[in-house]
Amino acid sequence: MVEALKTSWVVFVLAGACLLVSGARAPHAEAEAKTVIRYATIAPGGSSFGKILNAWSRSLSKETEGRVEFRYYSGGSQGDERDFIRKMRAGQMDAAGLTTIGLGIIVRPVLVLAAPGVIETYEQLDRVRAAMNERFAKMFEDAGFVLLNWSDAGKGRIMSTKPIFRPADLKTSRPWAWKDDPIFSEFLKVVGANAVRLGVPEVYPGLQTRMVDVVPVSPLAAVAMQWFTKLKYMSKDSFGIILGASVVKKEKFDQLSPGDQKVLKDTARRAAQALDKVVRRDDAKAYRILIDRGIELVDTSPYRAEWDSAAKETRERLIGRIYSKSLLADVQAAAKGTGP
Image 1 (tube, rainbow, N blue to C red):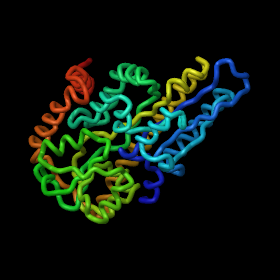
Image 2 (image 1 turned 180 degrees about the vertical axis):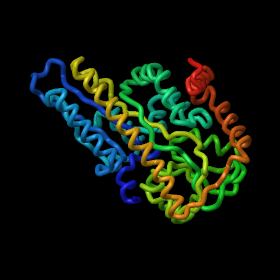
Image 3 (image 1 turned 180 degrees about the horizontal axis):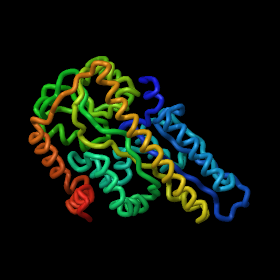
Image 4 (image 1 turned 120 degrees about the vertical axis):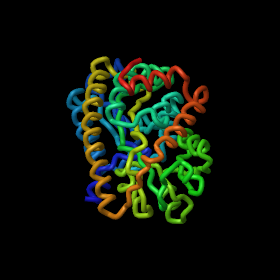
């Protein structure tokens, strides 16, 4: 089962679990011209994510009568998310699957979706996507990208070598924060902890050498990347949903005929829905597997007020630096189902 989950992982925050999609055809090109779309993903090519993408690609090719096809660059062969974005801007890639961290490099305010305490359940996530999609899509369009769909990569939990019950426990630990993640880094500052900033490929070696001993991660990612083999504890409750999305360069998208643009979006949406089902199912399986493998659950609920207080202070500190007060309020209202 562990091997099955490893091959089904769509990369977390890692990795990603995001669908990336794109297609392009010059509007005045010959009718039978074929456009090859280059896209990068950290996800392994043989994973369930890769299989869904292959199925999606076949649908896209069929429904565009062979005018559009994909060339995959999987397994992080093109670097990490910052590298994907740089290569898209340079014209070396056409599309990429990104977590909110990568999305935030393109559109800084989208990081509001990763602010602690904002989106904690799949129901909240679905409501936010439905209510805020057009607003975020406009932000990406203004930045030169087309937002094609949303996805997620499981429930984020705190995994560690010693139990973390309350925020103050992080002060005597060595918590990992992704180099491009200002959200968790700020949370650690709020609680008085020092972040160890590493890229995703550096985390496992960091766990081996004890450079880091705490990681925020979904069970699915912890199994796929074998981080769980160096960890002993996992929070019983999750601390939010790991989000992602697929983007394509607007310049590339605009080369498609209106009909092919519609096919691209329609098939991307269907593929994302299929992927969400796989990820949510497999993340729940991975959670149970970790427990069966001896990972001990840590009940943080007695200290919920402390976690909520630190989350609130983190959100407020980031107002004006990452996102506006009104955007945060609108996302929170959407999560609750009361607006915007």
